[in-house]
Length: 287
Image 1 (cartoon, rainbow, N blue to C red):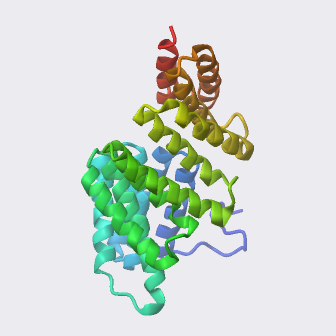
Image 2: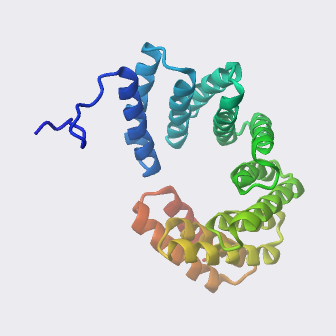
Image 3: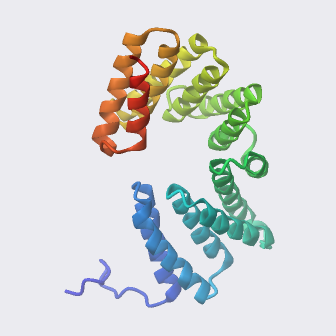
């Protein structure tokens, strides 16, 4: 039996664009599984085919956008920025008919948000803010101001404001994101856990640790119910709660929380992971 035959018995297409689409699907699967290093090669191959075959602009943008996300996860910020800037330039120059406009807008929102993610990681907060705001305006025009799908954009822009010590603006965006998610998906939806986590982080940054503790506890409660106690995202929530408890002088309780988070990080990522190192450092401060 031929190994490259499709399940329906037909031979796979020899069309280069079909091959590029299959490579992009492979890259997306690897990336979604948390394996960006394995996702890079098929995505680069897809881009080479798309460039050589003069693929339709939207297909080229989809490849470049995926490549930018992969390179961001690999901390290859310069190349990630180049890929996403190229994607953004193509989108901005596209002329779509009215029927295709929503598709184009959705793609533009994703590209601008990912470009802003790279700039935020590079510490380019002014550029990141501008691109988040552009993406948010486009998304609002498409879905309305109170749609839950705006939550990630509102959250990411709020993180920029937190980094810039613009705490009131960050808190307002988190509260808006929380209201939209709760109204659409319910108060116990896992997406709310991220917002509660970040509201706790704002209070930690302000030095208002007791005020942040209930937010952190809420994030743990929601995420643990959704994902289970052994999920690394739950461990991240627990570590954030531990930091707030620690700052209030409840060192024994904080140590128990840090050790609980550490156990999950080590079992998930191994002993040489960044999260393990940070948690061990925080445990060391207990003594």
